Image (cartoon, rainbow, N blue to C red; front, side, top):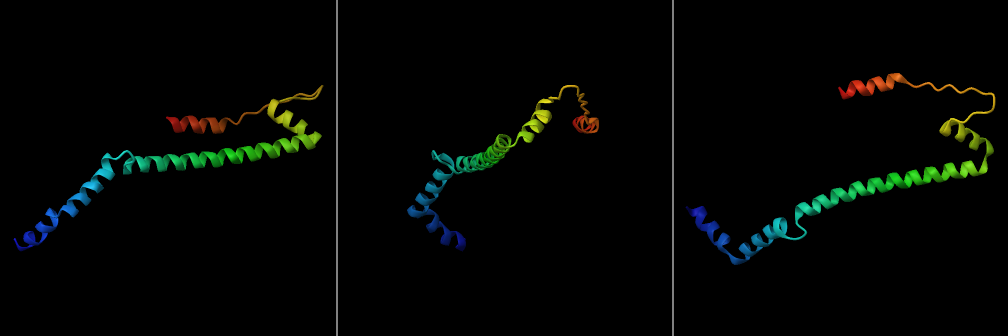
Length: 109
């Protein structure tokens, strides 16, 4: 009973009530509430990682393009690997790694 008499004036204090009301309003009802801020922060992190990935890919592509523009042998190598081109009178055999396909199909089961 003594503890209730000490706590009750604090709970009835208008500044305390306004502060609690403000905190509840900011956490749940405001246009920029806590949960939306948290979701926006997570989305921002995802976008930053994707931006970093695409910047790395752009840099790799630029270096590959620079290499292709400056070297004739790299053009031939690129065409052979990427587009499976061959020289006249040459035969090309393509071997597929079936062990990796089996592993992926077994994981799906």
